[in-house]
Amino acid sequence: MGSPAAHLGRVCITPYDALRIALGLILLTAAALKGQQLATEPVAETSLFTSRWFLICVVEFELFFGLWAFAGVHPKSIPIVGVLCLGSVSIIKSPLGEVSCR
Image (cartoon, rainbow, N blue to C red; front, side, top):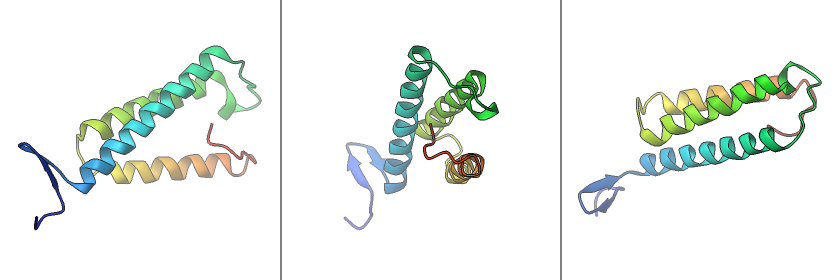
């Protein structure tokens, strides 16, 4: 009981692993929902950032990053890339007056 890790049989899940897996699942869910929205609803396409091809690239990146976080490949890079991604979305969307990351 001295370590913060939960032991499930022989698998040791640390709090970082739980957070990484949760982040991966959230991103995969967001990508699936955005992909479904792109497939079933019209897109406004009023600027570069609302064009269909750009939104498809966003969905693909979310899928890639979600799988990367879920798999745990290069785990030290995951928080850095996550913060950069969220920051870049905020920097792009804020001046445009967007209230949603969608």
